[in-house]
Amino acid sequence: MSLPPLPPPGALLVDVDVAAGRLTVTGRLDSRTVRALHTAVSGLLLTEQRRWVLDVAAVTVADHTGLRAIGAAYRRLLRHDRRLTLCGASPELQRVLVRLRLDRHLLEDGRVPA
Image 1 (cartoon, one colour):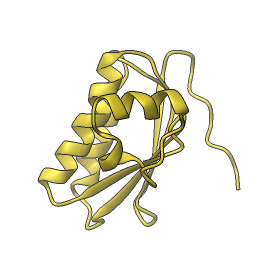
Image 2 (spheres, rainbow, N blue to C red; image 1 turned 60 degrees about the vertical axis):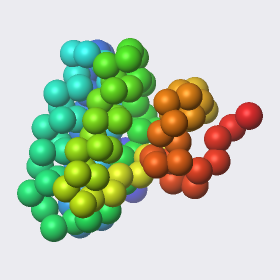
Image 3 (tube, rainbow, N blue to C red; image 1 turned 45 degrees about the horizontal axis):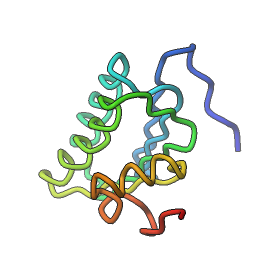
Image 4 (cartoon, rainbow, N blue to C red; image 1 turned 90 degrees about the vertical axis):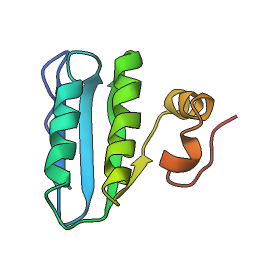
């Protein structure tokens, strides 16, 4: 299995695997890069895939806009009868999702580190 290429510093790379229902995000998710995630979600809505996994293991959520983009992607897919689950979320991101009450909706197993 090859690793996705690293984006330039300050950039975000979104890899979409329609057959597997998986988005892999690499890089920095912030106010300058959220458009890439929004565009990828737009593409997802054109597919027949109903369940999507957003792999955020290699992403740095750098500001509130980046956090809001994750919540917006979840809500947007939900409005179109799709599901989105996060995997690879850092303990810090998981704690933020708990504070925002998005953990039970987005985290793959609902467990959050202490």
